Image 1 (cartoon, rainbow, N blue to C red):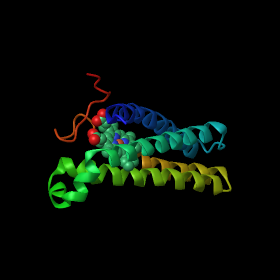
Image 2: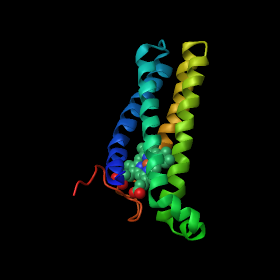
Image 3: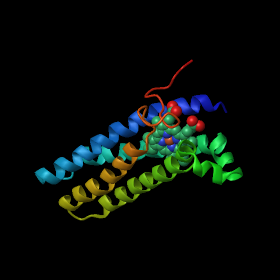
Image 4: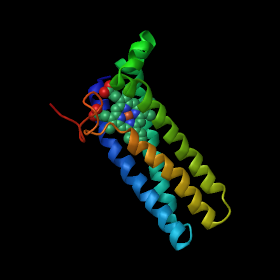
Length: 157
Ligand code: HEM
């Protein structure tokens, strides 16, 4: 498999994750503040957030295990840990994104299990809000240090 295209997909899909993550957090916030009913719009937003996180995780796993990062950490973990850019992609990005993905899944089931609308919105805000913050923090934005920062869109060249 050509990893270039997989990386393009991972780059683009981050915008889907962010869009539905933002929509979910805004719904949760207005739900808590306005004390409104937990409606289909709430459910749809966090379901789509979860679906995009699932796809992003799958693509991320392909990138990780087929690319150089996993081999590098296996062969020389000490060197990788000393270099902040290598450590970011070989360890930090993956670990924190998996935690965010777990929060999204636990969040969905917590929201489902809550028996009133106020609780549902509160759980939605806590779990999805935390996941969204972690995702925002662990994206290799262009303004991060040179070895870490990546472009906002795929660089077709
Ligand atoms: C919501 C979750 C995630 C988001 C938003 C996200 C976003 C990104 C972005 C924007 C890049 C840079 C792409 C580029 O260079 O064009 C990237 C790189 C990468 N991501 Fe993720 N990611 C997520 C989850 C994951 C997960 C769960 C894994 C692994 C299990 C993963 C593995 C990787 C790897 C290995 C790279 C570097 C690929 C390379 O240049 O060799 N990502 N990610």
